[in-house]
Image (tube, rainbow, N blue to C red):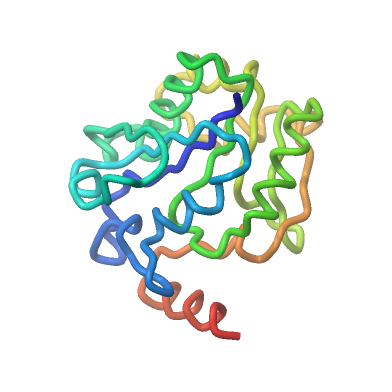
Length: 194
């Protein structure tokens, strides 16, 4: 079964708290992201830090993995590897990677990327108005590349290594509207009320 990996381990230094615990329309970002992945036949894995793990509700869907050093040398890529390692242990044929700081990501975006991955894409990337966003889907061969990548590598490095294998998937603006600052949070909050 394909794994949906929620990347929620960052400490959110620029916004002053872990982004996973930010709230929009009464739900935390991590709850919103897990909801976008739920009900699609995905095996959900949530990569968190210890603060986020302690604050999450017990009933949150998916297996929870704690990244002990989310802001360390490998940053988000360390969380990506942790999630992919779990997916490989579970025998997943592919993964969908979704950072928690995209609270407006639509279930239809997830479905569209999942469909392309299931149809045989090596890498499938949600795009909006020519911008690459998330989710990013990858097959088992690309997952192995992530695990074998040298220190200092980023997810972007792996995805863009061979542009010919990347399938772009049209998605909503939620696939590219990330939240890193209070101004970003205000911007996405205003979009939910339109």
